[in-house]
Length: 511
Image 1 (spheres, rainbow, N blue to C red):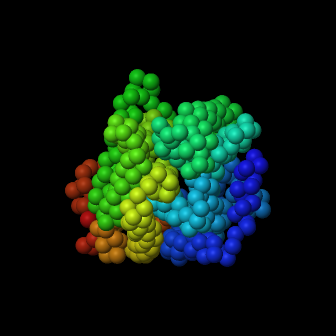
Image 2 (cartoon, rainbow, N blue to C red):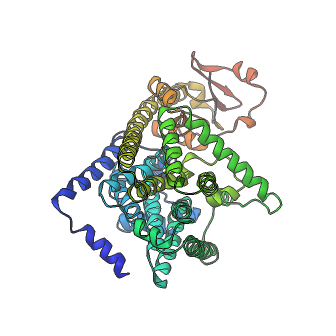
Image 3 (cartoon, rainbow, N blue to C red):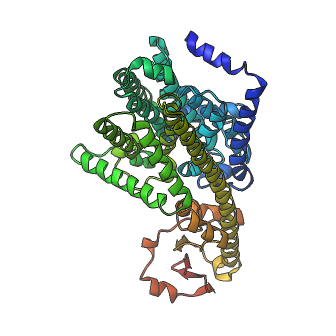
């Protein structure tokens, strides 16, 4: 523990020549978060917490998340919308996560804190996590805790250090379960990196103690122990909702292999499709390929090939235990392991370039090229953040227009006011705003995380902001076909959508 304390103390004793690295790191994170502070508000279930004041994280097994939120709000048991405070709070927590990654990989320059922060939290699949006004600080904190646990697991020598690491993993599970992948993914990357290297050599280069076997044994023990604590000690006290039980249901043993294969295939298909549909995706692919080749290049052909396969396998399996769940169609925000994978490649590659390459001219030029790739990625992720913020704001304004128009027409209609309505159903979805549509051509994956006016329950509840309080009716409850629906009495018939009535049900249909 003394070595860890010494390492932390050394961070506070830095010369003026290192201060610019700190300022640059902080500036990168602040710049990245500006779009969320300015443009992203009321994302998905934020509307329920903002209007209803309910926390409900404990019903998802996230009891520590509930506790932390209540502590931050001086014990209040009711959520209050205080945007953009959540996004602002994320800034120091993101920097803290980058700091733990900096310590985990034993880097020298403080610039690495900013670089690792952006790679970990700025990767495209974490944009949705950062969009939640209430939840984002908790999600970011859980990831940072897992990185801290990985650092303790790798760097500590005493047994009680591993107890602390396991406790941190258990706490992170009680804050946000998918963040667990940020613990084991970087450890697996380090274990593969140290494979067939001398222990002394690895320790000198990266401050990792122990062989590959030791690293994996310690981390597996911590992972199993923390999951057991979560499952058998805390789970009996959880008040899971029916929805929470449904999405956390593990596939039956007979169906488990096929479920895992299906989820891996779906995950890899998503990554490959998104990677080759944008310039940023292509740069990230180049970064991954070059990094893996450089890390694996100092060995025999067979060992190098084995390492390449293992690194790619870590990425393919980076969803962790979620691969065993029966629930299909997990949202992009659960792809936290992708960030943990990306954040592991750069420092490991840099360690190879710093310590293993002996031919000086080749080393210098390779480092310059790699720095250029990293700079392009950091800029690309920051630019992607601003594009996302602008598309989100543009689409939100269009959504507000449609909700206001629909609410006005329904409330204005005399037949609606005289007769009691059973509810409302929305068929299709509102169109994309011109700015959002253009953004999706460059960043296709954003189309899945920017909401439109749709017929799901959360979307129906948002009409309450405009004075329209109606229950959701599913499309399957309507009588007849869509052609019959279109023949009903129109309250409004426009080129982009229609509003009609069918058996006291308001039917909104986007064309």
